[in-house]
Structures are given as C-alpha cells and as structure tokens.
Image 1 (tube, rainbow, N blue to C red):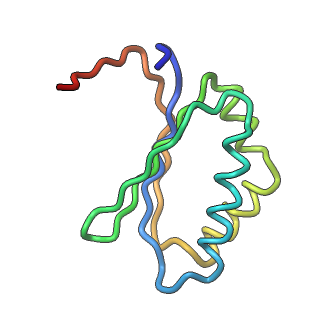
Image 2 (tube, one colour):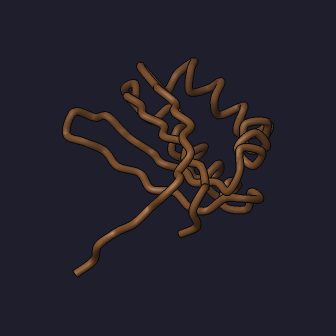
Length: 102
C-alpha cells in the first residue's frame, strides 16, 4: 500500500428493512471502484448492528470528486431520508502503514 493516502471511515446504524439499500450499495461500489484514485475498501459489522466502511483514496481531490458524483449524492440523500438512523464520516490521512503477517 502506498504511503500518504487518505481514508474515509463511514460508521452507520441502519434503519429497519432494506428499502432499496442493497441495490444502491452494490451500484455505488461498482462506480467507486472505477473512480480515479480509488485504492480499495473494507466493511465490517459488529453484533450491535453498527457498520464501519473504510474507503481508501490517493488524494483529497479524488475524495472530492467522489463526493461530487451525482449517483453518490443521490445515495447520500436516500441514506439521510430512509436508510440510516445514524452515521458519522471521518476523512483521515494515512502517513504511515505497516503490518505483521505470520
């Protein structure tokens, strides 16, 4: 992985029912994978129903371009209207990364 990249940490608690969420989620992930500067994503859900998605981008400009994507804006609007009880977004710069793997 490159050094000096950015991550968006998106923490959510969903409302009841699908309400079109899964279809939009799949569509937006297909789109972001083609977005310039996209480096990857991981998603985790805990036993309390809290979901954390971490999306990696090369630059802040790449993040800004994704934020301005019309389909992504539509998904954000629908998220506020019917998919999320709660969400939190953090944009962070990764200055160093290392790992251990046995």
